[in-house]
Length: 385
Image 1 (spheres, rainbow, N blue to C red):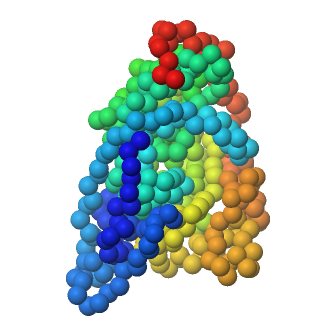
Image 2 (image 1 turned 180 degrees about the vertical axis):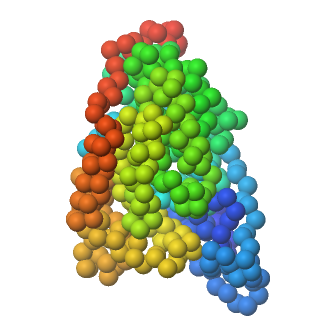
Image 3 (image 1 turned 90 degrees about the vertical axis):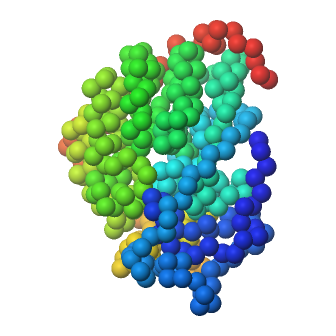
């Protein structure tokens, strides 16, 4: 893995402003940085650089930031966890960072481990795992490997825009398919339709399921929340394409954000009409650097309701008076972090359950078949370990 020094350790603080096609508004310092810098207006900066509102002082956005792609040699392919909150224990991610730029993404703080900012770096400085398919093949060939459903795209989206050119996700699916290893995919990317030729035969063998993330049907809100993800109507078309091809498809309504994406029932109805048969949701989580990033975004795009949203998020995560005084907005306890606690969490749970019951969603759980996996199906490739 390459060394990733802090790219901003010797640079002045970058101003907070809208960047065309990006979710974050700044290069916020990561939590391991030696120094944290704040922008200061000494009277010499121009109007664009001092932008602090959705329209800006001169009504303009900063120029679009170019996406940079780096390559690394990964040491492992599968990640394991024992979280009781999640329905899978094996994850697989071809990319670090995500060009979709979703401002709420809980994966943003992982960019800090690379020495990069969880802000704009997360969506503009991407890392692709060049040898992932080969490392995955070696791991699946180990005699001690026990087949269990793998979540492809468990941290960053495996069908983000660069996949069209890089093709790592497709090559990864080809390895899983050769081994008859069960897996599921969660994505916002319509690029998954390119790989229907791989997914359809696997679906017939009960080896794959897909979940399309659909946070809202409101195009303006979606463009602000998820600036480079497929539009809501395009994601519904992807749901329909998967369902008509015979691939089990569901939707993820994550995250639910108080006073922003309040169209849960409409999203579920549209997804069911498009062919989705499963659905799940999670509430907004704001770990580490994500909390100030999201607050910054709120005050730029929705200043009239920013404080109200943040207070309800605190309610949702059971933040005490002492925690509120310290500016805390998130607690990470298992059993609470995904669905929240208190009256608002209960109401959200009831709304979701009632809508699913009316629409006939989640009546049957998708059970992927682990019995077909065998390492010999990989062709006896020599282990890398």
